Length: 268
Image 1 (cartoon, rainbow, N blue to C red):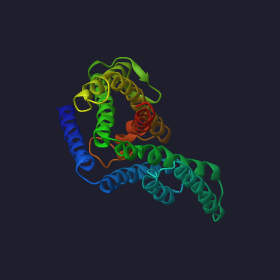
Image 2: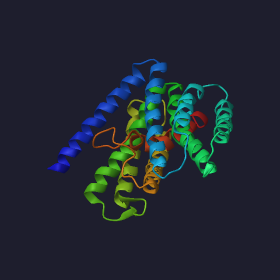
Image 3: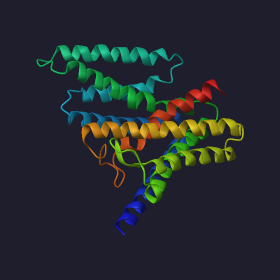
């Protein structure tokens, strides 16, 4: 009974988030969608740095979040070097901040982890903005999110129902091989079904994208599980009831969004 109630709450919360995201993608102007994404990025960065601080790593939380919120503002610049130059500036700034401290223990670890968090969450997550700038960008963002979340849902439900063999017990004890296969198949199925609203993209390319997202979504999920395992936490946060934190929602999208963009941009 408890499991069914939690499942219902999980479905309701995810449905609300999906509807709000669809409104942001298809109804709101580009700048409003950017702010919506920046909200998620900021919250996810906050959770990430809080997890790292529990390991007593001296990260620059406020500065890292601030810089992470700037990347979505510049990633749409025609020249990609804007972002690279900004990250270089971030490195310099973190070193300058380190100079002002009296205790320089774990200085390299703190600087590296802060920059890693910005790249991992903000830079990768901002590729959703680049996808939206493509022709039929709203539908392509929808495609990326649906295929990605199909992987999450398939892995969860099939793993709960049929999971018997552990996938990577040391990293995520609840994930199973059966769930991983189920999530991968669901990604391909949803990608194939996307032909309904993406008639200009061939079935071949949709299936390739389904395979790529099916792999990268689960890789992103496992990567965040590794971070949580290292920080000895179950969820990245508790902001979303029965779901965990914002980073728990974004984890699979972070690796998938750049892959979808690069494939669409340079293959199609």
